[in-house]
Amino acid sequence: MALESEFMVLGVVALSIVVAPLLATRVGIPGVIAEFLVGFIIGPYGLGLIRNEYEWLSFIGALGLVFLMFLAGLESDPEIIREDFKAIILVGAASFILPLTVGLAFAFSTSLYSFVEAMLLAFLFSAGSAGVLIPILRRYADRRLVHIMIGGAIVDEVLSLLGMALIVSIFTPLIPGFPLPLQISPWGVALFVGEILIFLVIVRLLPKGIEKVIKKVGEKRVEEFEVRLTILLMLALVVVAEALSFHAVIGAFLAGLALREAATVNPEFYDIVYPKITTIGYGLLIPVFFFTIGLKANITGLEAEALAAIALALALGLAFASKLAGGYVASIAAKLKRRDSIGVGFAMNVRLSVGIAIAEVGLSSRLIASNTYTLFVVISVVTTLVAALGLSRFMKVKPAVTEPEEELFICVLRGLKVELEDVDDTLHELLQMVSRRRLTCDDIPALNVKEKVSNREITLLLIREAVSRNLIEIKGNMILVTPKGEKFLRERGG
Image 1 (cartoon, rainbow, N blue to C red):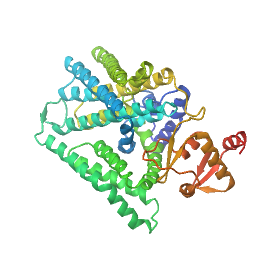
Image 2 (cartoon, one colour; image 1 turned 90 degrees about the vertical axis):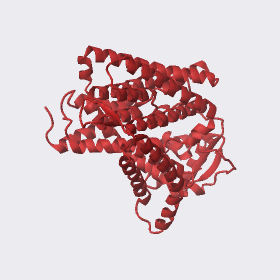
Image 3 (spheres, rainbow, N blue to C red; image 1 turned 180 degrees about the vertical axis):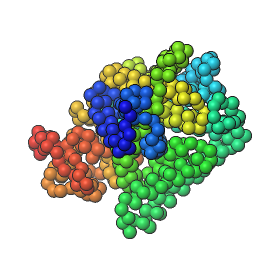
Image 4 (spheres, rainbow, N blue to C red; image 1 turned 30 degrees about the vertical axis):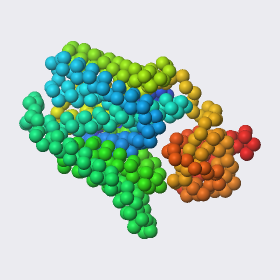
């Protein structure tokens, strides 16, 4: 029986996005997959508690997709690629080209897909999702291996989104509904190149523009001005993208990349905005997006058709195997260990956010049918789930929190760069400072920590490390030592 009251629906959605990640941590799967599964279970193709006909819920989900792709761009740190350029480019190129080729061969060898569906399926095969991969890899301590994985995913993410954008720009429906005949728009490629040029101009001008606006408004102390400005810039590029016949997700992703570039000019702006935007996105909008994807996934429709079910099984196997092979071969060529190379192959299969973005864009642009949409979603979810489970069981690396790491770290706090040679010793000094007086977040740049000259970018945020170990907690603007932090101090004689 479906829920009638909109507030009851909202309550069920809120309960679902709270419970789903808790269940995910117990099972050992990414939280976004749990949110998708819960949406499917209680949706119209599961228990039927929520019908897929609430426009307000669909709009929140669509806004969640915009935030997801914006954060994907914001988290695409070019410094990661520069750190191990050769290995990352090898991994990214191989795990993009091989799946793309396999996807095209598979799609065109069947009679199930139109030309455009085949092209989008190929880009789905080659997609990567750095934003989903980063939290999966946080507990692994092999820094170089993790950076190669994330860097390769960034390369695949950017290339697959650009490929999707090109397909959407040059193919437009001849009539508003199905079945497709499609026509090639002669202005499509020009619009695509035009948007890229516009983006490059924005990236060039945005950092200095942000700095000037912040200086002018900063003295007036407008509440949360940086966050409001960021959301405005994101939505502005979304509007520009749609005005140029692109989908909103392209504008959102490009906006994230532009803001990331702006961080090189004004790192303080990034430090203020990033945690607050992630709170808005991952606290509400993005979980609702994955929940609504579950509502729309009609898996039973695929099971009813034998040919479609066989195609799904083949597509799943080929998508996973081609990514695994591409990542493995490239990693061996980059002289990684065999076991680590297999781990890279698993990591490259994390394609959830971009895969679902391709599905959403294809469906909303009327370029793919509903069954193809479900196929895309299932491939994205299942391959990511298998990849996450494979990484947790296959990679024999020590958790980053088990013991001190005797290697060079760089901590960038509000633009201050300091080198830290022993994580636990430095954490001990930090906790001593916090325990002696009430320390605020604004005091962090003034901490008396030994400073050295370094040109390397962020590899570890000291405060984030202390929070992740539950040694400190941040309440408002205050930094406080937790009971676990007090025990840490006592054990080290603090």
